[in-house]
Amino acid sequence: MTDDSELAGLRRNAEGGAAPDLYRWASALLRRGAAEPARAAYARAAAQGLAEARIEFARMAMHGIGGDTDLSAAHAALDQAERAGSAVAGYFIALMAVGRGDFAAAEHDRRLLAAVRAEYPPALRAAALLFGRRHDDEAAQNACLQLLERAAAHGDAIAARLLAERLLRGEGCAPQPQAAAELIGQLRAHGARIELPPIAVGAPAQRDAAPADAVSLADAAQPVALAPLSAHPRVGQVDALLSADECRLLVAQAQPSLRPSQTVDERSGRAVPNPLRDSSDASLDPAGEDLALRLAQWRMARAAGLDLVHGEHLTVLRYAPGQAYRPHRDYLSPQAQARDRPQAGDRLRTVCVYLNAVEAGGATEFPHAALAVTPQAGRALVFDNLDADGRPEPASLHAGTPVLAGEKWLATLWLRERPYRAF
Ligand SMILES: O=C(O)CCC(=O)C(=O)O
Ligand SMILES: [Fe+2]
Image (cartoon, rainbow, N blue to C red):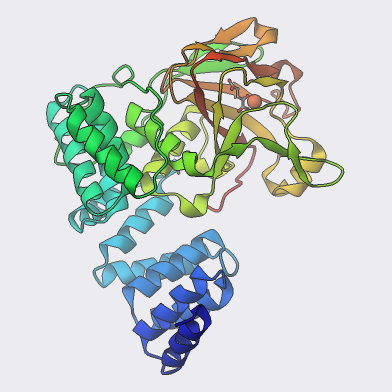
């Protein structure tokens, strides 16, 4: 059967108006990039109470796919699905809520736990990483490994990879290089391109007394204490902001879409090689974000004292030996602001998290502060790009110095003055 005759068949079935047929047709449309009719068909199936259709419709409405962003329609669809018993709908309600200062943790912990019990892989992965942060709690470490195993057993390749890295290094367990090699072999056999940068467990974050059978999203919302490095320009640092698992998560999610760094040419509007940096990078689209990734970004936003809605799309950079980010400032030209959500204003603050320790080179330098910061997995650097009056701050000049040996992986979150994302 050709692609088109398959679609025509699905459309004929959908004409009968039954929710499962509408759902299948919508999914086929979406796979072919026809987002608008797909969203309309999901909406019709959702109106008949089909949980999967309510969730797919909500995801499209959340991210403005196939029509405008409509958070209240997304919430209504997810609420209905959750009340009808869908734990996955609850997971998405929690995902939307994460990132705000007024986050009602207990309510969403319950949702995450329900999605874990329903064996929903993204929930298993997020819960695993929350437990994994409790470095000196043996029961939590066991829970982390078990949850990663369960997610991997459901086909979650990223969880399998995170598990392999822990087994390889004996994190939370005895080293099991054989089991790790088998897992990595299986992933490669399924086409995964895996290179494992050496990311060791960072210094333990604060000890957490919570019992290991209770996931706690509030862990992600802990206030972050920055150690000031410079007052002018304003630069602060915090170690172990992200755990080793979270660093690896960011690398794993970015790796498939890395491409040579480019920039938009101001005159032609076209993407051209970036004269400032010769790294590779990937921008992680919020439409593809899972809860674990949002929690990591939320922690980054917290370090900057802002809600996650201020964050642009997270960028992950990889520098090979010899590659660098030449001296620059992160604030935007008026043209660049006008092109990309002008209502959000300029880039108020930048948060960079090193995702590995670099063998040699790769420090971040602030010439006006005579400051050089050495990469270390999980270490975050937070700095202001604007002065106290909101004007571009020339002293925020900074550079990623050339990597001399090994690779450097870095995640950057640029935070605007006003909300940039819908949630
Ligand atoms: O690579 C670095 O150390 C600096 C990165 C940076 O300046 C940025 O991402 O804006
Ligand atoms: Fe920068």
